[in-house]
Image (cartoon, rainbow, N blue to C red):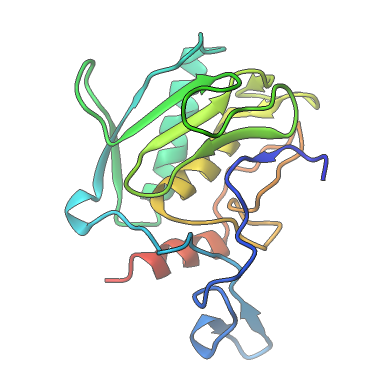
Length: 202
């Protein structure tokens, strides 16, 4: 319970989409693999007319390192773009964006206050809200030591929520709720990929 985690609540009653069924088993000659991805209540999605999403940065407090944050988020968006129908582009200065990313402390007006150093690292909201907030009180880095949190790893996770995924029960998945300090976990797993494909079936 003490491992730093995403602030998005876990789903306690599994939706039918994540319960093992014949369609959620991936068959091979050797074994069945059960999907562990899940979706928020109501299964919110971006409409097909909005698969080209824009993002911008707007913080409530000074960002630890804006250049590192921009680079980490850009790379995180590309990881999801490479396995989905989505594309992502940073919005020009002053223009409206679908996704707004920033650093905040404590009570920052979204009815989900941060708790200071440790525990809750960040949170984001399901489609089509577009808000993604880092906790500014954490020790962030793009190359973390054993006491720091990785900007990109958390960005990849939170973007999954922005696209409509809930937490996975697979501890190897990007969408698993917790990540220890010093860990770099940036690569999407098959469970993450299966989840985004299931949500946005053609």
